[in-house]
Image 1: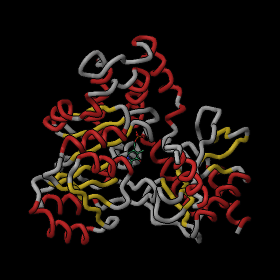
Image 2: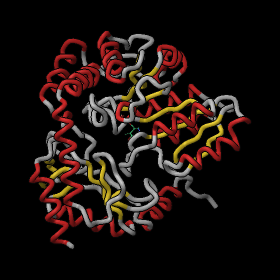
Image 3: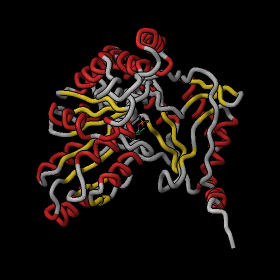
Length: 384
Ligand SMILES: *Cc1c(COP(=O)(O)O)cnc(C)c1O
């Protein structure tokens, strides 16, 4: 009997459908902002990571155009061969200056920054502790490294400490991985206490500031700044693709760390350098983050307004512009997202396996108008 070796794919897809886990892309046809054209309809956008509205900002667009005209569309090689431009160094200096670190290194995406950095820092002889709710890129970076990986309960430092006592001594190096703002929940990791615990057990810490950069802290440097942990020994990573409105990832830390990564991070060494357009747009975004503090203030005003509008509903604990409405089932989440869509709101249903429990995820932007957020409140009132 001969069987088709690809048959399992169809069966697997059917399983995904049966669990209501099936996903597909939706097409946006305008410049992404507080309002998007989604499949022919105009919707208020609560689905993007464009927290400061910079992805559609004229200044970033101009910077990208000028860099493209000067340097072309592609960087044509890896940074260590033909792909390095002065613009990359300028961006890395700007990131280091924003983060108040000695140096920084730009990767082609945040995902690749995590994979490459984690795999360069630890191996089979080492130990990783990882928050259960960490982003996929941290989890897969941990797997790729070959280190022993132990998950701890979400933001639970008692659990982490118990596990450190039990396992730390049996391994050479130890690395603790955490999101700073948890991407699908919107809560914050208890960073100062986590760093103290790491110090006590001689552990490195990598904190993922993907959703916090440009958003948290007085100057927009992230949760490290927000928690007054600037200057403490740790490894910060983040993305250029969320509040900074571009594409790419970065790691910020000591001169030694960055020099080491330039020599050991495979996802940096063996991939093409960031395009001139993406590099220039991110650089422009960092300049704006530094000078336009009122943009961040507007974002936080909008966050407070949204929380007020949704009060009385099952809102998950959040201290960020990510605000989630918890629901019981995948089907329920899909229904609510559909009803919101019919009423002019774009907010996604987030379901297992991305998260353990289903929810509707709203992300707030500085460029939302008050009326956008009030409209959302009115819809929930009407739908009950
Ligand atoms: C989005 C995200 C990443 C990946 O960043 P990209 O630049 O989009 O690859 C990493 N970590 C977290 C927590 C994220 O939310």
